[in-house]
Amino acid sequence: MLKLKPNCECCDRDLAADSNDAMICTFECTFCRSCAEERFRLQCPNCLGELVKRPVRPANMLEKYPASTERVSKHHGVA
Image (tube, helix red, strand yellow):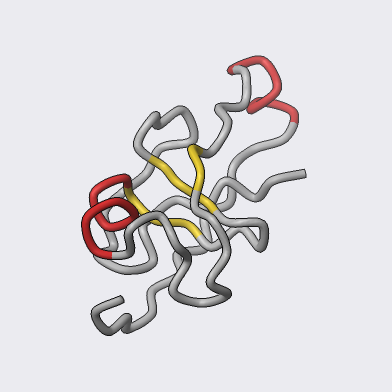
């Protein structure tokens, strides 16, 4: 099950569980759409995998399976 991390690990922008601006790779590295598209050209700077839109978990499932509250931030050089 996806963790649904609460922030962009590059710019630390908040990304709600229902955000349409959250992008992830196969390892669940999480970025905002702006960093993913403009800074990293849709390629994860950590694993070099593809960054795609993160699915939105339905509200009724968020109650039972809440999103992560653990923030992840890393320094990322220009891709």
